[in-house]
Image (cartoon, rainbow, N blue to C red; front, side, top):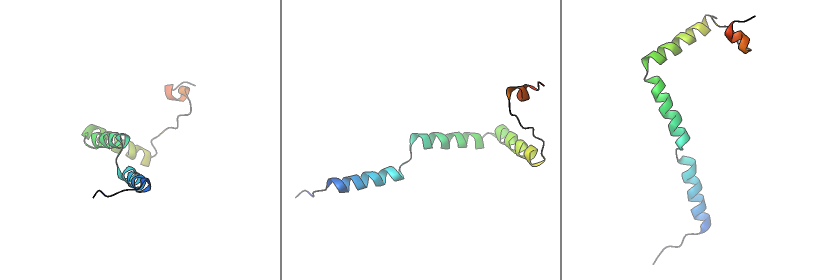
Length: 71
């Protein structure tokens, strides 16, 4: 004999699956992270930037003129 399942049970199971599943957006973000972490040049640039920030070798940019070095 076939087991019956209520609509509420199905809904709860679907909600549980939704909470545990990985979305395409999550996968895209993870792939992008792996790509960055596996690129030695990019990692060298990131580490260099962190060093610049640590040693206060930064300039605040508030406008396009600041970016272009205009007065």
